[in-house]
Structures are given as structure tokens and as C-alpha cells.
Length: 246
Image (cartoon, rainbow, N blue to C red; front, side):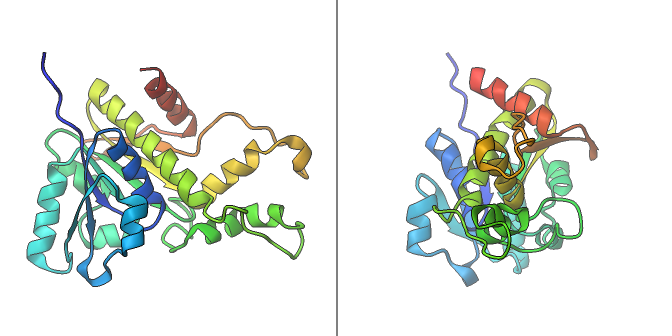
């Protein structure tokens, strides 16, 4: 009987959604290498909270030799996870298209950002409270007028996005195993907060006409020879369900 090697994850993420997503995969047996900058080292609480089960290393991507090493690691990875803004990926040659072009067997890339991956706010930085505010979640938690409130658990969108991203990466790995190719999983904090709003019981919403349709805020896109095709929340939901039943 042949034993398959563990999937290799390259983790270029920062607090909190990204590291949580890759820790979830490490808990399932994946080999995860977390890369951070020596100029902005992660703290001990960060490591204890979201880096358990991972290997951790530093690379200064502004150094040509260390950037070359990052490209070498990415070329041999099954999954590349990033939570930095798109302009950072462009600056260092780590966009999903570039990573797919250098991968010999196809790669799954995963991106989490604050406000979505298209539109005028796509490259804005943001954290969990920003996602709650921009989505209207904080307004709903407050009085709906001028007294917004954050979630009682505070870190809402971060952790939910992390779990959605982990599920999306699993779904994309399954699809790669079945069909080949490279895939890009996208999640945003604001969209995850919106999903929470849609799952609330109707009696607690001001607009009871909004119904939860079961669609998850995780999108998976395929790249074949650099051409994007397919991928929406409905397709992702079906893939996630296939992971759960496989």
C-alpha cells in the first residue's frame, strides 16, 4: 500500500484569518511552513494562538536571494496562502497567475482580504472590526442608527473567514486531484460578516424577507494556462459539500 505524502502548504499570512486557516490544515496532517518577515516578527501569543503544528521561518522578501528562495519554495508547494494586499503579491511576483505559471503540478492559492477581491476597496487594508463595520454587521448589532457595536466575541469575521478559507483550500485540492490545474480561493472579512447576518433568525432581523440560501462566501477559480474560468459561491458550496462527503 502506498502512502501519499502530506500536502505542502506555504503560509505567507498575518493575523488572524490566514494563520487560523492554515493551522486548521496542519491539524489535519498538512505540512505547513509559515513565513514571516524578520523586520516584523510575530509575537509569542500569535505563535501560540494560530501557528501550532507549523514550521516557522523568516524571509526578507526585499532581499533578492531570499525572494528567490521564496519563489523556489512556492514552486514546490501544493498550496500558497496569503493575506497581504494584492499590491504586495504583485511587487514580489507572488500573484496567483505567477505562482501557477511556476508550478510543475498545479497549485492552490488562497487569498483573504478585508473588503472583497474586486471593486475600489480591493487593495485597502483592514482588520476584523473594519469588516464588521463595512458590512453593516456593527450597525445591526447596535441600534441601526448611530450606535454601532462589534460582535460580543469581538473576533468574528477573522475566525469565520479562516475556517471558510480552510474549507475552500480542501475543496480546491480535491478538485486539483480529480481534474488537475491550479486554483485560487478567495475570502473576505466583510463578506464573512455579511454571511453571519444572513444566517440570523428572521425574527432578529429588521428585514425578515432576507433568507439564508445556503451559499458560502468562498469562491474558487481555476487557471488553465493563465486563463481564469468558472468559480462562484454556488460552485464552491457544492465543492465544499463534496469534501465533507468524500
